Image (cartoon, rainbow, N blue to C red):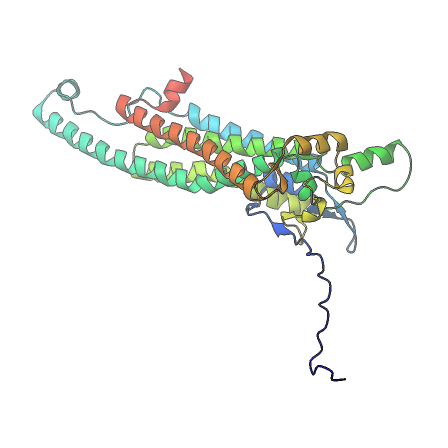
Length: 347
């Protein structure tokens, strides 16, 4: 009998493809408000000893946000009360104004020069308003995206880091374990990001009146820097708090999506649903938002992926587009009527 020179070997069985985690494409800018979100996901720790660290609860960082929020809002509204609301934005060149402001030909010439200077200064004011909007765009963009991330209930299942549970029995242990569940700290992160969004929005609205109220080039530039510094106080306050309280972000903290919490049929695993505050409600929510694609696979609209990312992008675009469109018309209306927007808001 002849044997073949090359013997065919059976192919090894295909191993199941392991789902690799991926990262959410959202920049978490350093600051006291975003630190509340990081703490709610288990990413902020405090030093107990040189070798021991504990997880900082988001509630304590939210308390640190309140003094900063009050200081920022007070500063912004004090700047508003310091404006001369009855003063025009620029000098008009009508014959009535020239006659009223000048009693002689020499005074009319001086007034004409003031009108030209006022029109040139107006161009600089509009330029600084545009620059300030561009500077705050990344701040508002990240705030809105993080807010949508917090409002998604499945975020606290897919992204929340694992926490240590208290093994002892008793009421205190049950309360501690409940506070460590996924999503239990979501309200603290939501309130902190709402504070951050409110500060960014008020800065955009009041910066227009503050810049248009300036009388010289130096005042325009300095007022723009002053209103921008109010936004940057969040990072300054966080640097102080973390040094004073020996806190820091976890070196391994990233917005990493854990794909192992999903079954092949598009539903959450029992272990993942059990980590939430309301397991039955979370499972029902996934069931209500699950649809079947053309390929036959099931997916939830709230699951991190192609569909959810596109929905989040469209919602972010809608919020920012409405905000900047409103501010665009506010500036145009202020120039047309020669009245500060703050005067219209107050009156």
